[in-house]
Image (cartoon, rainbow, N blue to C red; front, side, top):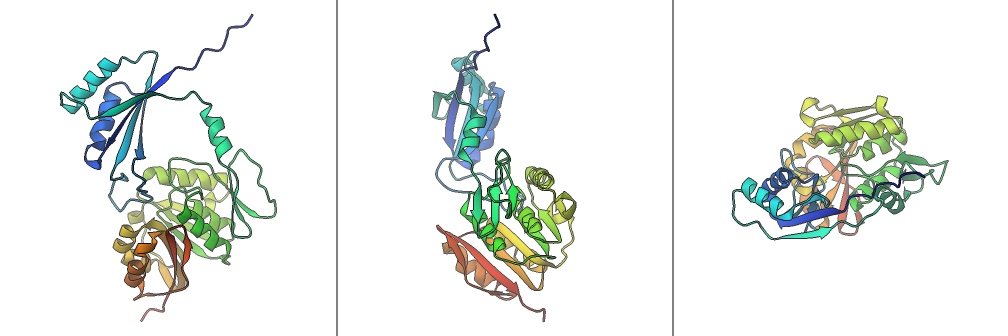
Length: 304
């Protein structure tokens, strides 16, 4: 006889919903009370795709969830530990619930499938075979950094790229996240890519994905302030409207005369303001739209 496989522990999760002012305190309190993991999620369908420089990417209403081993968890003791950590006699409202027993790796693999953008560009999870051997395929799995093609803004950028002739171009992916746009441009023939982000996890993810796709030698990964601006053929900025407004001069300086600037992390209600802000240096073509998200396509005018 062989020993039976040990049963998976029954996991218990405590979920708090709160404003951004107390998120860090709750996260610290959950960890202090013995949580084996703490996750932050949007609790109000308020997407944050890319924070501004120096900002923490939180939502107006955030769900902070602590995960505990149900075999050893003592709820009254957890509450007391959190009260001590928060220096309060009363915890904010929370919901305690068992976590469904699932094969989470299998669930992820069942959820993600190859996606096509334009005529010949695919994004394919690493556990699957690319569906079209003749097409350009990015091998990409979900990770800590934003960008696998599932969000409308990333999809707009990938569709735009798939319709361009970028052979030999120099490219900047500003707010690179997973590095998917830089990698796509390189696989489509770009000569060199500069991938910039303020998040160390994004830089790590970009390097990993670039190596997986065989383009690591042609991409430079860096924090924005560590690289002197050099005019490039294409700058891609899939970041929110606020940072796009704040970064006008910095992004403009990275585009050569006649080069392209595409901006895609903005909702339709912000498109006019963004376009007007950049119009002194760029001529804009037709907008691309998916759901309520917009891609602006600008061409840098000659310097006067």
